Length: 221
Image (cartoon, rainbow, N blue to C red; front, top):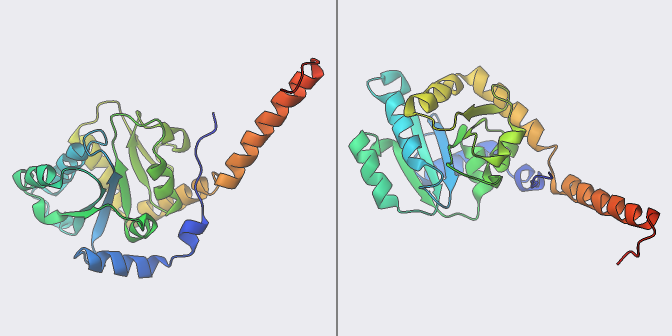
């Protein structure tokens, strides 16, 4: 199995502090806010509902988490989920960014990445978030789990996670030392999965297959 790759240059051309300032100002977030980022083009499959419930579970009656905000980027029915956020009492914590062509800036402007998908063959956004230095919280149904060691680069939730499960992992990452340590480990892991390295791996497989055919005397075509 050769997983997809990521381009470090997409991130290295940006300054993290500048991105945090630009994106947070754009969406009305404070520089001191703790931003949980969700990225997806299918809110239902990516389980945005679970993320909303997890955040609500975390902040309910807890003034210590007043700065926790949820930034939602991608394409989906925002009105449905905004109504859900209102019912959960967290509408003032949810910010819908829509579709963007500057996704790298959003990773660099955030603190934690969450995508508890019901299903993802891989989930390239997970690798991108890791390249952006974010600890990630995903599920066993996300193919990118192969790159995440629980407690090292992030967390892998069980098959059918509860809002309490998600909230527990977010609480751990609210501690600055935990968040930064895991985020840096995530970035180092992602840097080992560049498109250049993936291209070389594919080429090696083709060369190996060709050599095997030639050894057996089969025509190369």
